[in-house]
Image (cartoon, rainbow, N blue to C red; front, side, top):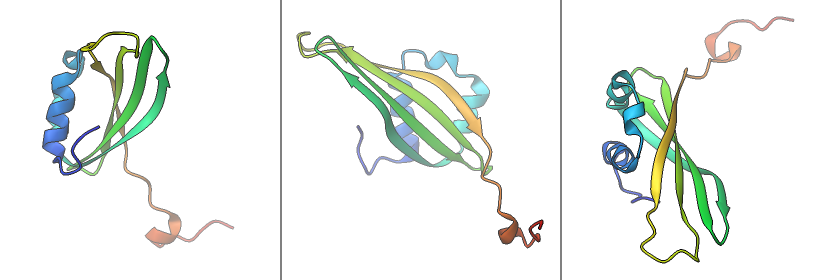
Length: 114
């Protein structure tokens, strides 16, 4: 995937540079991503056959306002029967904003209903 020592800024720059459809992300979303403090990436699904390789990655970013934003990346390319260098391309399929997790009643000091 990527360099384990890659900064959040470098990671985001690399992801948007390789994306074929980064123009689909609104300017507001890109500006919000610019405030990212940390990121986490994980392989979500994978399919490999002799003619097609497909992988889906989830990239989650912790933003400075305490919210998270998730980008989904689809990486696709030819299989082992396609001669190199088969173009492998990535597509940022969607951005999903999410709210920070809600604190449990015990953490806020609110009594639990009985």
